[in-house]
Length: 175
Image (cartoon, rainbow, N blue to C red; front, side, top):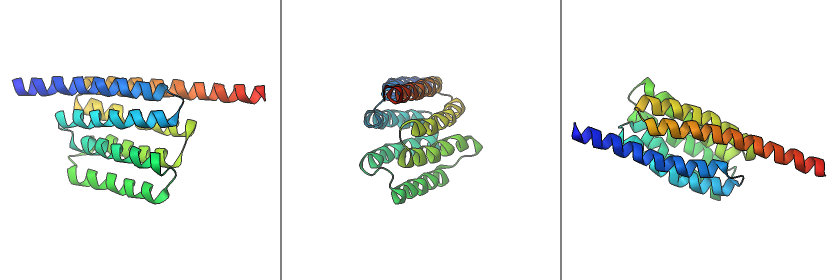
């Protein structure tokens, strides 16, 4: 019981680190800063899911680290996006445990498409939907911290979308 309790506590602690990194990233109006902070946050999310023995979510979170690094160097690269989608499907196939893995798979696929093919508001909207999938995945894994993290990420992301829209309107008005 001590081992399970310690693993659970470590998982919650790691998820709080991810929370802080994600909030800083999604609060930023700069895509490059968002990507860097998400890279480190997903290392923490992968570790959290390992601690909760949610293997599909852990594998996809680890792939997200690679995806972010690739997106920063090769934005809108369709072949790399397809490779990441295939890798996401492969990780899910190799670690699949049942229907509880569907939300993590959906988040991984949507996030790959959104990060490679979209920018600005559209990218953040796709990532907001992916965050909803991650919320479900965290609930199913039993992660209180991860659920809170993804919920706050979703809200922060939506607020940033509104800030970007407001800024675009102000630039339009100012001419």
